[in-house]
Amino acid sequence: MRILAIESSCDETACAIVEDGTRVLSNIVATQIDEHKLYGGVVPEIASRRHSENISWVVKKALGDAECTLDDIDAIAVTYAPGLIGALLVGISYAKGLSLASGKPLIPVHHIAGHIAANYISHPDLKPPYLCLVVSGGHSHIVEVTDYTTYKVIGRTRDDAAGECFDKVARTIGFEYPGGKFIDAAAKRGNPDAYKFTEPKVSGSEFDFSFSGLKTAVINLVHNSQQKGIEINADDISASFQRTVCDILVKKTMLAIKHTGHTTLAVAGGVSANSGVREAMQKACDKRGIKLYLPELKYCGDNAAMIGCQGYYDYLSGKRADESLNGIATLSLENI
Ligand code: KG4
Ligand code: ZN
Image 1 (tube, rainbow, N blue to C red):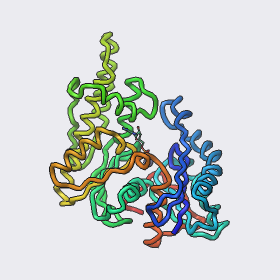
Image 2 (image 1 turned 135 degrees about the horizontal axis):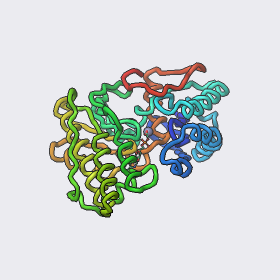
Image 3 (image 1 turned 90 degrees about the vertical axis):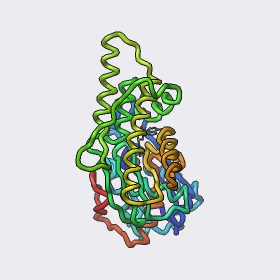
Image 4 (image 1 turned 180 degrees about the vertical axis):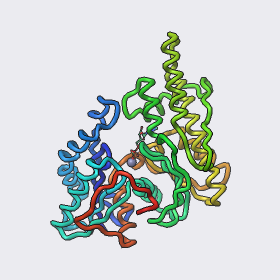
């Protein structure tokens, strides 16, 4: 079964053709980062306009690269939540048009479910149930993936998402948006013991995250140093900050592993590309005999292949949308 998948929830206009869930025939991602970085973050109005300009050629290129036409496609999948509403609506409207014109079924896909599904593309042996740590620019969740289309969120961030924290710290240090990957690179050169940042205490749920305190601590350190004329070492701050994030993610995830009894863990979302997170998680899993799955780097960030993969499982479970499909800015994985 061939699915044409569209993703436009934030600042990437993406289309992929995916066969039987995990065979990616083409995967086109048109990023808008060069424009948004001028403003230090995604400007929703600009994102929607660029999606409108890019969507047609991105879809045509995905079909062309897969050497097929709309006739060879069995269904259209599209991200409908969560995300920037104006951005989502561009992809949704285009997908509805394709579905109506071709008579092919329309499958609404949750963006975070898509990130989780990226692991099925990279690892066809991965099967639910398992635990998944989702760390992206907008979300930080610990999720029990009970089946391909059912989820139980057992931990979430109380404030900033992990990626958001990376990006804000990066901006303070002087890196371009989105700065996660620059912190990753700088951390490789720096000393993780140079600065001590305390891990936040979160009352209530032992699996919930909080990153805003850590973010503020780094920002205060940088600003205080600047005011006193003390030169900051960006590599050392990056390494110390990244190590603290890794410690937090590993600690909470391993607690959740212990509590739930899962022996398989997956990590998903843009921050799963972080070399420190990948290494720390591998080490923690090896120590405990946990099988770890990490997406290939090209499927960590936003892309449409992951939407095509999840769309396949959603299709098998009977999920369909009609021309009334709307975008939803905020929607829990548990309510889909
Ligand atoms: O999943 P994603 O592409 O978009 C959302 O759904 O939010 O995640 C984007 C986030 C950004 O915050 C970006 O800085 C972060 O992923 N990111 C990284 C790395 N690569 C991307 N963070 C840390 N290290 C990286 N190597
Ligand atoms: Zn994403």
